[in-house]
Image (cartoon, helix red, strand yellow):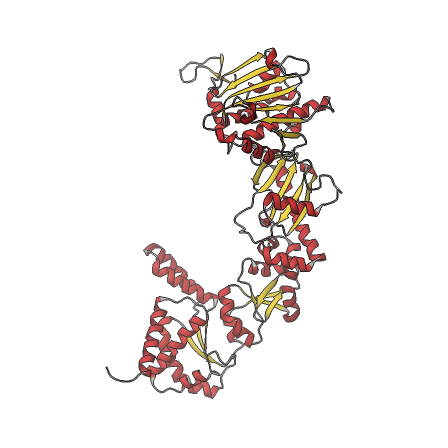
Length: 612
């Protein structure tokens, strides 16, 4: 076999216009294609079926009434330990055998012989090489029309021989018989059960009859509509999903992309799935199974759907085990995403209760889509219930009641402030879950009338009641002692009157104060170089400190303010500081832990007087 040319004289200091041929190690090419192109030996059955179906398709172009049968005889039934595949296809002449079975990489001659790639499943010569995954010898008996039967025998070491078959081996009818002599280590791939299962897996939807022994493995037409306007048999699709995918689907929707020659069904999964674990899709090309785990057929946000499709125009990769990424696949992905999106919109309009059930299971996918799709954002705005400090409401309901969508951007912020904000008649949305903050902040882009406001912890202090000036003046000595007690923690002590009365103290950290704390913590861990950089950042950061806000309406706080013992005041303030940290779910630093320990032991010591 000759592939390519190269000029002589390279590396010798001489030049020459004489061309020489590459010397190709065919044994290495066979090993490369048969052992490294394919992911599993099981594909040999698919390649044999592809070749047979291509041959039948070619024959029926000129003989529409020609039989359409592929018959597989496993070693158990042949009696000589070989596997045979018979087809009623067009067969090959001796010249075609040389062109198609002994030439790798020359597609133009294949097209001249009538095997154009668009109308056929695979490439006969390359596909046949996959059989060397499980066989050391391949024999092809083929007859074209009234021509004599030709025998081609290929070996795993790259040798082949072509002869006219003797009368006793000749085929009586046009078609091809492929015989595989199994390798010693590949017996498991030739059992009748395995061959039957693989024929059913790869060829169940083929438009020809495939028989393994006495078992027919083809089922006929796909269960989904294959022509526009065809009725949808929902019960059959649900049954198919249960049998093929092993799930009881939440719903099924038909898919169609005419430019890709694609029809199929999207199965909406009934249980939550990890968005990072992409479910593979089952893809058929011209009714032959390409892969059970195709990636990239749907947009990433649609991880809640599992597709089973058949296409005629999408291109497979060289191994025919995945889809080739090109502009058609990109357009197909977008079209399928639009159809899944349209299903959601229809559900919102016609069956809100069903949509609510879906969102409870797959809200992450819908919210991910809503990040860049206005229609989905409106759907989330109207239908997705969100946590608030006044109950569970959708964003649309929240706006109708309170006008402004005021939100806490993290779960910790909401936990710290929800109850206090509610006591101040301040409604707050918990936007700490995945995508919620981004979706709320995107709402004004879609509707300019929407008002949003991120809740700052320091905003609450503006709603607290200030004390009477005389009372505040009288409390100055106490505040000074309280400030000394927590000075090492870097917070400021203030006293206000607020609800709920049962809450003695509140620890509030603004975003700038939190930033300063993070800078300080990073500075403690950084080396000298990065420490200098962080010092420079700290110098430009706004001087803002967390606040420990004591509640003057709380009876315990009022009793603490009347203490005359400075030591006891310090212990009480330290204890109130620790409780405020814990109730607000704030991180406990080493210094805070030490302060909590000191206050606990100090108060316990004061409560249990006596000498050792």
